[in-house]
Image: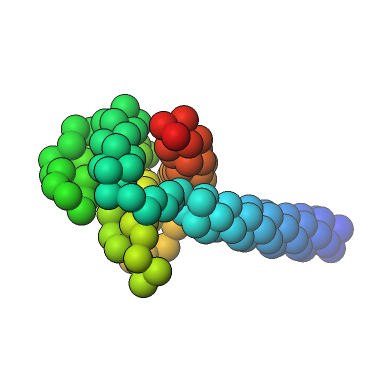
Length: 150
């Protein structure tokens, strides 16, 4: 009986240790994904100076949004392009913003979002990794797409 109790304790301790390691691995993966998201968002922008050039770049940004979002554009004006939230979870939808900077040039920035990335309490959901990967990919493509216009 003592032997069975020891094995039970050992197996329970092993499960606790494995769960702790899995939690640490999930936390490390989350931190890597957050860093990749931050960098992708930082890079998903372009600057332009001349008004004529900026209008052409804005048209190109709209084409990118239309080509890379799962949902249709629901708002498009001189300062914002926005797609609808998709009906399904785990899919990327986009917005582009155009604004004047303090330096006098124009900044066009893409923002990718993913339905279901976060739970209702604001914590990462089960789709977090899927969404983070998709956002990093789309935001990474934006700068190359925009450079091709120049």
